[in-house]
Length: 214
Image (tube, rainbow, N blue to C red; front, side, top):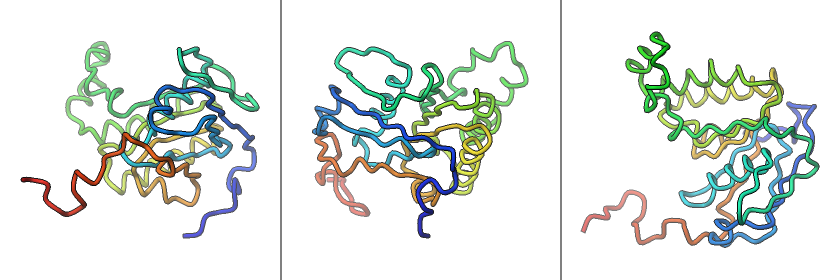
């Protein structure tokens, strides 16, 4: 499917570029500094192999938007039109409510749901109930939001993400492996595999479909 003209479906977007001047992890991954990341599109997908720096870049964007001063990290947000404190980072693995049941001991209905629901059902509930309650204009940062979701449900969360952009003026940036999110006509993809990264698994691990058992 051909891509839509840039920003055609979202006329109110503004330009936003993050310039990374210094970053200890990216230096180790052999990124060239300064690294300039185009975040102008309202729905950005960070694509790349395991170890290519997707999550690192996502967390870096979070630090920069919040104005956090982290040793060894130097950022410049241009033109800086995003309010500090409106960035929300969600890591599908670390923030899984099913692993933090103590947080819901005073919410018996939610606790019962978390005990009975699958991981995928819990993730869908985050998109349906939690994210829409965030303030309008939130910059929502998602690390592998497709985790535990079937292909049909990945299509559902893509629709939900577009609704958050259209109805609540969100900017959304995802680190993802999902073809459903990466190949969607409405998304803007930043491919980190164009860098030479020593952290990416090499061919010694075998090739797809071949046994690596000795």
